[in-house]
Image (cartoon, rainbow over the protein chains, first blue to last red):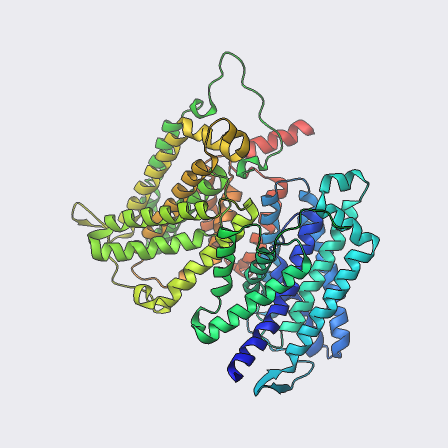
Length: 290
Length: 335
């Protein structure tokens, strides 16, 4: 029981991280129709920026969180300018290659800036608490809490504001939305920024649990893709639950089957889903919801 | 949509009266013969072990990139699984050479197994869009390498495998760097010849049609999935051959040799060389194997340079070096 609870808690914390990355991917996909392969490296960037602000500059935690969100938003807008704006209208594969190159560039710049030695970020709340005898780090609670907050914020942004309505219109029918005068050129930097900020937030949150190295985010990217594919990218909540599912399965399988294959389980889920039900397990809603 | 569709404008229609398919214009067999003939000389000029190692690398990367060219430019299926196929080719080849007798059975086994995996991949993910297909191949490649890492009784894991069969022809052992180079060159020449023959066959036009206009091709009675599957399997098989050649040429290797950076390098080679011609794969491989030698001081910045290079190429030179004449022509005409 103890072991099970601790594995489950671990899975849920990881799942929240995957969910933050996956939400960023899905948002961008809805607004622009592309999949960002640099999302994982944006997470790493967030973790390193957090490390730099917190450990080197000695800023307090809440300020660090705020600054990371702002800086990563800027980074996302910069990515859009460099890697997406010049390629608008080209084949989606070209844009995939471009975002992949951008991710590589971020990774390489991080290696130049910070080197390859893994760094540790102190957690805002260092302690643990016990649940059914299992010791769970308080950081896990913080991660889940932040995911819930972000979920509410994203929901409000996309359901209750004019900008959100425009993005949803783009997702439903791109061409009609353009004909209706929705300014996609203004929306795409915004969504790039928001999705990068989500990745950066995930980076600061995950950094105290895992050690921060330049390959961190790229390793998590495929796990987030597994969540996106499983969730079906139709409803954001579906993606978040799919991320939890992937991470919990990963944690339990690592605990009870074989810890050596811990990084393989999400790939297996991804491959199985794409082979069996490429449209995702959550049934896609064909009607338009406004 | 495919690699060659990255371009902007369709070519001008052929003049009536000499409407020969492009595959029959130009002198492909003489061109191939000249290139292979010229490739005979480098190992005679540069004969120390280091230079021969580089030359052998050029051949292995040419094979890998040619395989990727088949998958991406011809079959229109982007794949991140190049490093996985390379690993499968290497391990299967070593195993088969040990148990079935010699390098040649290893090579054949490597090609057959990787081609089968390629075909299965396309079959399993046939319903995915091209981007999800790319994601699926990324997961597949990573999964293959993780399995090889853990399956230590077969692969040795990080300990590596040694005691690898040395290639031989008619009982003559190919131990020296030169002989390995000529073996690789022979294999590459055969595969290039096959590619030329493919271009001259009607299947090439069917495949281009199926790749670029899948549903329309299906209406005319072609089988797009089957055609793309064929192209993808051939490409995977060529990547497997590269793995086999690497394994038998190195004498020792471990699972560390296979990671996703390899897929990235191969992508860059093809983008740089150009997807408009199969020689683009070789141009790219030559440049990217020798470039680090000239830029020793800048090796710290290698990955930044690679990333920038990919961006610049896809934005400004979508046809790569092999298509430079066309790109420059457009710029001149526009000016």
